[in-house]
Amino acid sequence: MQPIVQLSGLSKSFQEGGRTRPVLAEVSAELQAGEFVILLGRSGSGKSTLLNLISGIEVPTAGRVTIDGTDITRLADKPRTLFRRDHIGFVFQFFNLIPTLTVLENVTLPQELAGRRGAAVAARALHLLDAVGLADRCDAFPDKLSGGEQQRVAIARALAHDPMLVLADEPTGNLDEETGERVLNLLLSLTRNAGKTLIMATHSPEVVPLADRVFRVHDGHLVETARQNPGRVWEEAVAALPPLPGRVAG
Image 1 (cartoon, rainbow, N blue to C red):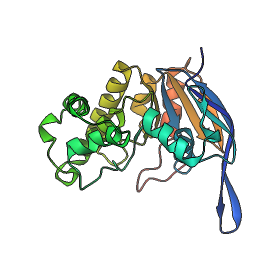
Image 2 (image 1 turned 60 degrees about the horizontal axis):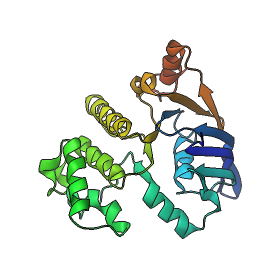
Image 3 (image 1 turned 180 degrees about the vertical axis):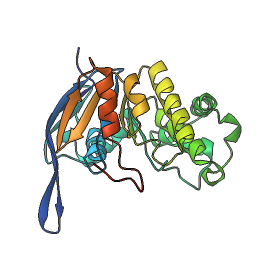
Image 4 (image 1 turned 60 degrees about the vertical axis):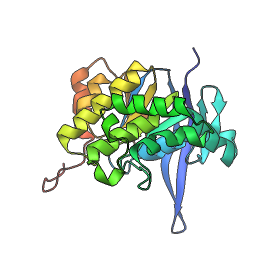
């Protein structure tokens, strides 16, 4: 079966002050349709960079990203942007809702950008807002919503155009623990039920046992954690968490 995501020798470096800073080095992996994949790693390890490369937001220094048979690294800027618009949903840590648009308008925006408008588009958006428990807030603006509500809108928006692949970058990073748990359960439930592939960068160890596959980004490399020992998976997940304020690391 052809993998939905194939990473082949993927490397990424940035230029900073006349020096080259490598972030990822020859990362390779194959992910199958419908999998829930977690990326663990400390802040600055390259998790967000890897998601940006998979989505085509950034281009690699070397290597390839192939999504459902399309090598997106060979696409020019505009075709790559259109591919992302049509096939990938993204849930960001900072919500990234457009403040001048209502909740409903934020959710319908991905389809409108693809040239789809009308009653069917609005109906799908309302269906997703109902699924995330916010159908009654469709006319509200983002600044009237709590952080958890804004992230639920962002999840509905990410699924509005029926993407084959959903990427989530620390989706609960700006939420309290209880709200974050509800948002994670909602995101996983909606993507599972729709058969989507979900790749999530997270510091939340409670979702690790729910994942099909768990990878750690460490020293520029992507290392898959064996699932035969759930206890060790949990320990490694906790080890990936940043130090708490006032706590001595190490």
